[in-house]
Length: 121
View 1 (cartoon, one colour):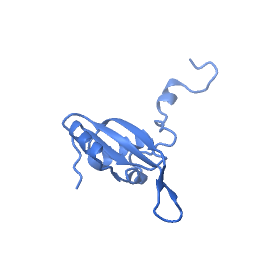
View 2 (cartoon, rainbow, N blue to C red; view 1 turned 135 degrees about the horizontal axis):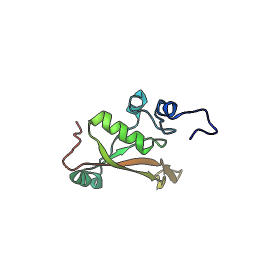
View 3 (cartoon, rainbow, N blue to C red; view 1 turned 90 degrees about the horizontal axis):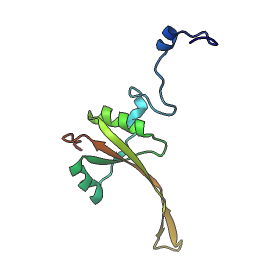
């Protein structure tokens, strides 16, 4: 119903699809900078048996960016992505300074379909 607008149904259908604010387009070259490196810990390696892979990511990355990066880099489609923010830690330094701070980190848990795997070479 176009009582108060000049748009018709045909013009609305012809508009370009919208991209989420802040999300990178799958064809964007910056998508290569989304995944810093795989996260190799004991817990992460146990999760790979169940199709869950862990990656270190930059702080400003969204779940959709991670999904697009995984699809483009490893040619698999993720089912779900969870992002975890790890806080900075105070660590004792064996110098005169006494206490130092480790940087905060961000990681993404990527869930794949059963039977799909990612090979790290």
